[in-house]
Image (cartoon, each protein chain N blue to C red):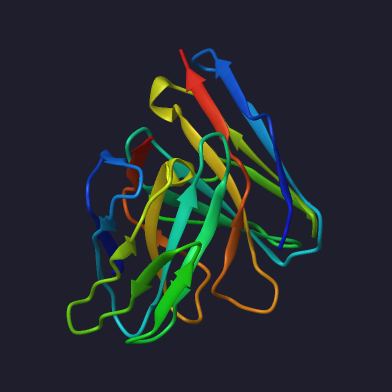
Length: 115
Length: 112
């Protein structure tokens, strides 16, 4: 199994500012995923981050709002830009499991509150 | 598109009670089905999975059977413990797709 370290674990931010969330994996993975879990709701995939190419965003999410970096096979960042209270959520990093396309491993998440 | 409908919570049980969390899905083709668990303060962990009809996934005393005829994947445990208190998510993906579609999650609290 992969060990995923996500930072920060939580933050309280002011409206209009930006926050960058880091995701570090203890092994090389091709695909990394960023999910959002809004209060009382299910997880929603924001984007897929592949090393060496631009991230692929899901419907309703755009690069200007959620820029993603993937500089190598063990690291990715997600930035939440120009935040508003509606961005208050848990943001989760996820990576593919090795040897199968059916298992994902998740980080412990970043609890973001926007005032 | 793919979607998952999960029994709403919260669910509160006494220790040793029987737990069932209903999950039904809508999908094209033959998805794989999963239950993830999120313990307080931790990330999501895969609890069990099933990849084809009539498969039964099991782990830590939990079971779920892939029922194609009823498009369901209900989670059950015969005797819950306080340590089973968590949020449980039903999810699916297509066999060749890493993207998961999640249910809304069910919060389970087990009281001693």
